[in-house]
Length: 284
Image 1 (spheres, rainbow, N blue to C red):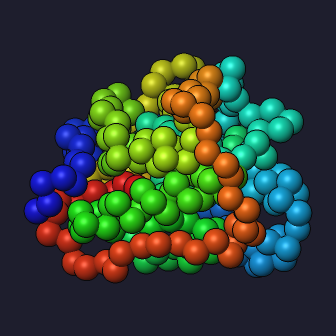
Image 2 (cartoon, rainbow, N blue to C red):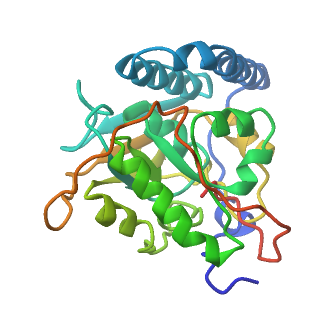
């Protein structure tokens, strides 16, 4: 077991025991069908969308993420002084950092400020979503190989220098939402090296009546399909996404490199191998 691999104390048997209001089985089936249709539409339209101008791609990604979330029955509230506005997502390289609860966190952030994500190599093997995530220019991290971490930090810094946002979850593992982990410093070094702002974001899940819920949590040995089933069954699931004021880098900013098209930017990643670490459901 790798001694540096971040792990969470949250487990499905202890953190997912709450009974939440549920929708009918026909509604669940409808949500699943709508979500599948939205994901497939993203796969089919992804290639033509890459040929669109950058601002148009940002708007399309936001729209697609919001459609996916809506199809799952998730209501999204975006707020905060650093929140998305008319120019958000087009202001250049920024390291977007957020707490990590669920696989839903990724489309949630894309609905506000799209960017290239950092994900663990196992995500590539997810059905349907894996190839789609890889095609979006995701930077992959092999969490079982410590020696690849400097290369990953360098790859993230290069993306930031090119003027593209990068979304990371510095906790390194998913938590239930009621508990949280500390932010690991390694990826912040990428922002320092690139002279990029850091955009803190908080993600909280609750029910329509205001009660916090751990229904979307994707923790421990929880399976993706099991987690998806809980989400589509939940009634009144709300996600509050708060963009805090950006934190500027220390010292003068280095000159930005020429920005290549985001779908052509080379992505560095280590080769995956069978992990001996405890199972983790984090897409980090």
